[in-house]
Length: 275
Figure 1 (cartoon, helix red, strand yellow):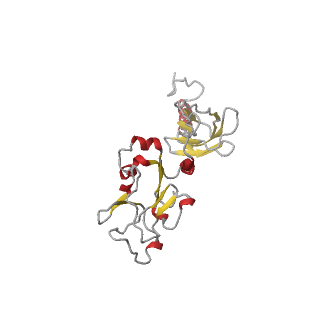
Figure 2 (figure 1 turned 60 degrees about the vertical axis):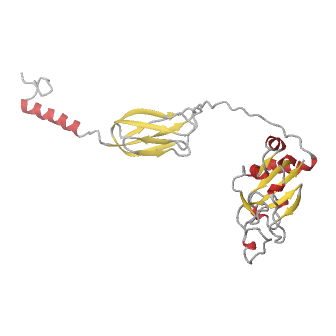
Figure 3 (figure 1 turned 45 degrees about the vertical axis):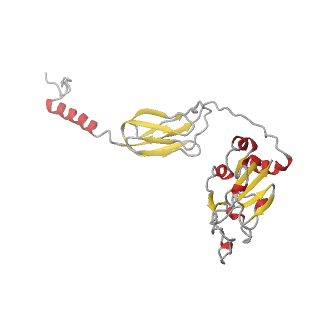
């Protein structure tokens, strides 16, 4: 008995016809390669069955991607057949990673994504009430609440009253200290002088180097500003930290509060409050 290449007896036809039938089957298998192009489509929903927009659908091996529309639908065309890994991800949801064999011309894959439950570390929040301040420091306390500038309260100054004022102010980034040429004192400088102060030569008091000196207030009263060329900038070494109850520093025009934004204050402001 003659058998075909598949081992099936060839009883009803001649040997030649059996061989032709076997070759036809082999040709049919060969005509359906794994590389045939397919369409992958579907809808992504959440646990309430509502469409999820913005889900990224990725075929990593093929570097093909799609993003779901407003109703959660997606579609990827020209996908080679065969087993494919499919990844779906969206911020706030658990990613999906699965394998599917693409055989049909159009493969519909609907999935549901669950929210990603993230266990955040416990955050302890301590609410601290405002420390009572003397009446004259109410404006200082209000400006501190606004969050602009650098502030030193009485508790900090009591811990550092052994330091000089210049040493306390060194904690403020961006300040520099200019010693007068006659060694008679030190003043604070910050920022750069505005155009209004550079159009014409300025006359400095004797021994005062050319710099952008900060405006100085003491107990709410202005004692120096860049607008007056005849007054020497205050000497920081004349102020004893022991006698101060609070300090506030505004390094630039962006920090200076409106009530202290006087002519010449664009070099910054130091406000000292005595005990």
